[in-house]
Length: 171
Image 1 (cartoon, rainbow, N blue to C red):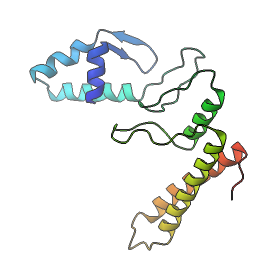
Image 2: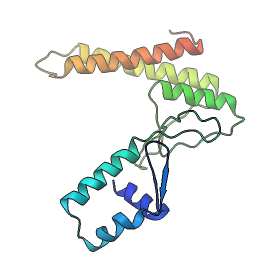
Image 3: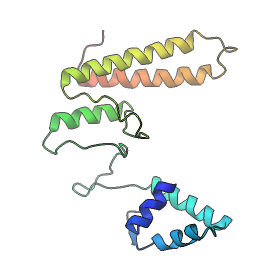
């Protein structure tokens, strides 16, 4: 929530969930914060505002479609880099986003079709190992066993679907 407050203070703009914009709102929250006079009601207003900002729908300025939240660390390829955009789309479909704390960066991003194929197959193998690990534990050892099995099964299926969509062979 602090980064949202910093952003509001810096930009003095609040983007409403319906796509509208309210300008010069930073003073509403920042004056009280600096003086340390937040009331319980102010804190609730801040939480509500933060929730609205985080859950708002943002539309593409060019095509008007709803934009995907790829994370604050996402660096978009050039518009003309069609293959790179296809790889990014595929990664997003399989659950890869670019939200990090900054410590380790966003991780590996394949640049070519061949690297993408190897990446998806490696991830599939990793997810299958995690699924097998969960399946081999008893309920006593692993109280959330069914939730974990469902989670990893869903992840495995997403990767398999994307591999099939990309027309890579599953080995």
